[in-house]
Length: 259
Image (tube, rainbow, N blue to C red; front, side, top):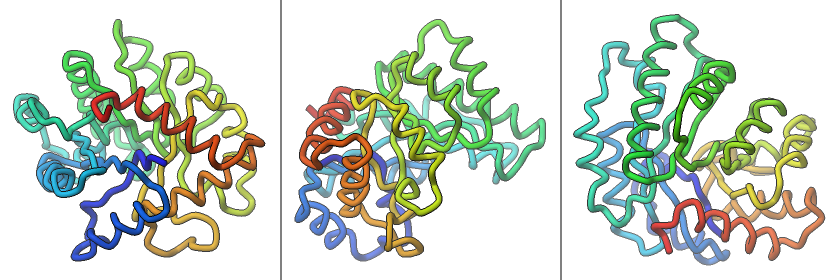
């Protein structure tokens, strides 16, 4: 199994990373990919990736950065410096757009600019991107359609609609669903899973958030990716072993620096 999205740099894991990584390994999690939310976090994420054999890093700036700091301007050379020559950095992320909390025109524009800069860098550096999107379908669609070359990548913790899912899949992106897909009365997400071809699916936990099933409300951990895998196996009418094998193959194709 590969957990493609776990925020191991989060304070929730302070002082217990050894235990968290070991418990994931004990249930068959072979690799964990850790995204960063800004440049300072990226330094911490890279350090974590170097400590553990099966842990890899993403370097990027989350859209919330410009929500919290409206005057923030990304200096691309600083981002490049954090990525270049680093074997444990396997992609650019977590990047994207989030208009849920702040719908101001100025902030939206800043998010779009930040997102496009990082997409363009991913193309130049031949790296995959990991995308966060919330209530920004129209703007995201415009950006993707406007690019001559779109980097390969993953839309993590999918929560958007079916039409946008079709566009994302047509552009070759991979998709993952968080632990919330296992919650009761979540038929919409279940239907979206069924619209996602297995060859475009990867697994994630989004730890420490969105703990699956009966663990809802607790601190989520990479070991719980097996619960998501089991739930998805039921939807695809496959064995858990088949889901693990296919999604791991997909993740290794996407994040090919892990090979």
